[in-house]
Length: 227
Image (cartoon, rainbow, N blue to C red; front, side):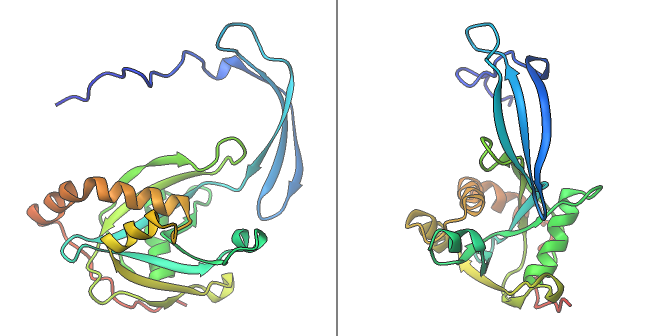
């Protein structure tokens, strides 16, 4: 069955030729970079905007993956220290999905599998792509690819992370219902994690049929030592 045609969210006819970049400069470069663009773009009612200056935070693209045990109806999340909540004066240890940066010439699925080993000792095989999203397109250039992956989480969990990256990560297995409740009551404050969990909730029945009825394998997510 083909999806119905777009009715309301039909994209406009603009393309890259409707944007004119007059100047591009790097105003800061470290672990991430800040670029300043001077540009003009097409307007919905016709014509071209006045010249404007916009800054964009450039940190490279990333991947998020949630291991999901459809038999036990559990998911694996990680808890770690994050500096952004600290900057806001909020509790800086937060629950998230497994995530990592995609380096040059890397494939997103391979990064998801590598990060699952490093951050949770979890060996993943099959990857169900959720989609690719910008988390804050008004300022961040980072594009995140999201995955859900089948896993046997009956023996998963523990403390993980790479010493040379100063990682201290606690992997926890929780019922999907509790993870969703944590989205509802805002114990989960990571938007990428909330998005992935809500997608899983919408697709639970299909994933169960796909991963169980077709006998697709679920890797045993043991406590794999990572150094």
